[in-house]
Amino acid sequence: MAQRKSLIELRRMRQGANLTQVGLAELTGINEATVCLAERGRVNLTDDEYARMEKALRKALVERSAELAKFAASAAAEEMATP
Image 1 (cartoon, rainbow, N blue to C red):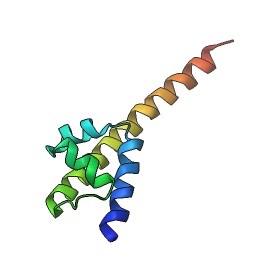
Image 2: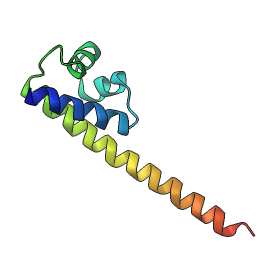
Image 3: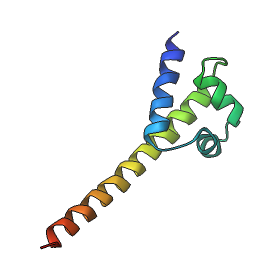
Image 4: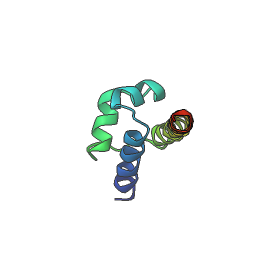
């Protein structure tokens, strides 16, 4: 049950990072079907697989946050430059 709840959180992280299951599979080296089935609670990940997913998602979320911050700063600059 604990891993299932954690997998739900990993799915939210994946979606928040704007990654597909295919993208996450490519980043982690985990088979796409395994990622899909794990998110649905149909297979249990090994500790290594779980750790690789979590590490890749944390990195992707940081990168996504940086992208959004740049976009927001650019939009704010344009707004201030418009008379």
